[in-house]
Image: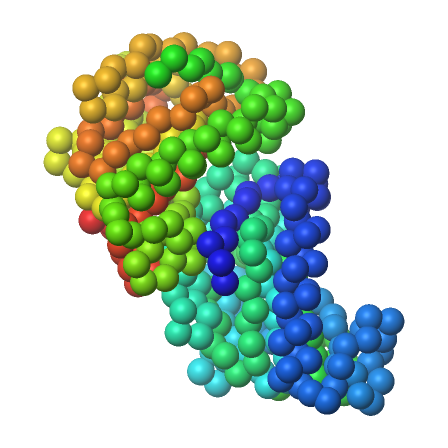
Length: 200
Length: 197
């Protein structure tokens, strides 16, 4: 991880407001593929078979909510969750024991989108493994219709590594918090279940 | 400081004020240069600082006090009286910014549809900036005032923002810019919303 920074933007026009986004995303993808190639060798990535990998390939899909637990500590079915109380709260964690990401999945995380008209979170901070990242005030996002915060350098959330996203909740209400990026999966059968089903 | 200002829709700031990116970049460069000099041998570490580095984040409301003199948890505050008011100061005694934090200020955003302030003025340490009527911002849905040249609010330096309040009620006034933190731990181990000292 280099110095990194972030940008607040309208998610719908991120490429206009933040022209480096495509490069940032491509860089993260390249780093994640390199890591998967090493960790999951002899499996390799075939871009043409990303969604339907062959026997010797690993695959790629969107970040699935089932890889995470929400504010209530239950595995998410979708990104919408009910924030039951105000103040400092755990918003998202890895779904497996110890708040870790389930085995055989690695996530390339590049930002957060809040596809709600009502923004109930004023501040966030997060921790990946033993690395803590500082608090970020999000209130500027209230000015946007489709707010997002995009990191100038993405993060890799590795399998069996803990992930916690905390936030300051101003109003107890429903909120949809969508991590932006993609997930790599080692075993295709794990993502062939019923949509919304748990992943372990 | 010779720069001017622009009143605009915040979400169109880049269209209406294309120099914004350059202003923000220049302010960030100045702030990092100042922090690197003041906090040597620490170096700049962005949002992921390592040992021996200082960090960066958004401007945090916990560094400021509201019109009632209370430390902000978010940028939201309640006006309980009309007329000339102190609407924001540094949170420490004497209205100063706490030690180990420096803020780069590039403007103000009003995160409400209903604007309750008609005029503002600012003072940074002993430098007084003149009154500015902002009623033009009533025309906008998401009004913001962007300075053509940013200001640095240094640690242990006083900051006061005054305003003429037209009506009582809740107002969310956000300082636009960035902040550097000499001790990243202060933002990494504290809970969101918690005080910063």
